[in-house]
Length: 130
Image (cartoon, rainbow, N blue to C red):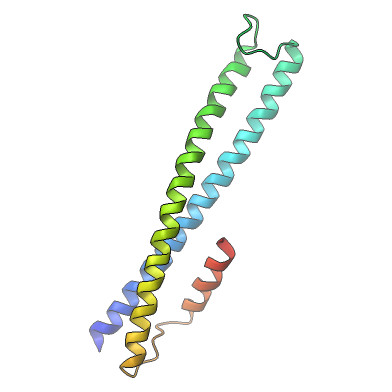
């Protein structure tokens, strides 16, 4: 029975860890998208000041050029994070299924299948994440 409790605790920890990882990825995506928007506003201001909107023009503002390059880099980072998010969601679903299997196994053997009350809190947090 003790090893089964340890298995249940491990599966519970894995679900919490995957949930945390997913939340971190979501926060990073949101932060990068905010930076992207801020850079867009700064580029527009610089273009408005100079009266030039063509990045290929010889007098195009240097700051706007640099901000545009940074914005393109952020776009790539956002795409990469979204790919990681897809993998993180799949890993969370797998960990959640493993936890459910371990809980059913524990319940079948006469246990409660629940280590702590926080299992429900983790499920609620996942539902809010998405």
